[in-house]
Length: 88
Image (cartoon, rainbow, N blue to C red; front, side, top):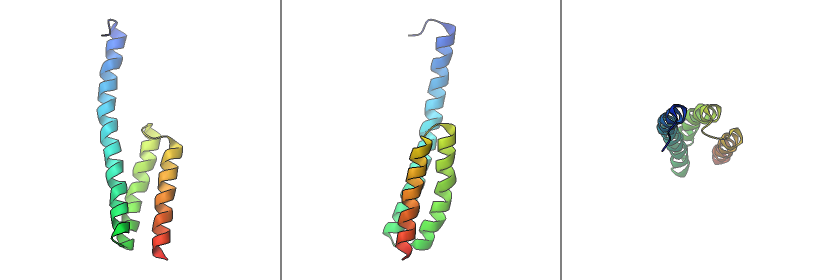
């Protein structure tokens, strides 16, 4: 257990941040699954709409430090490629 006031404060901050980050990551995962479900149901329009929701969420996660920027870009690129491929 931390003895210094600054260390105790860091522990409090980390706990708060962990909860927020977990919620944001959960939202991102849910949105990604929504796109994947639309693709598996052959709902192209639904997949396009869901992709529009996923893109800002992924980029926001990268900006906030929840995801590495390259990871967010990779996930978005792969989802986009799957949506484009499903159209043809």
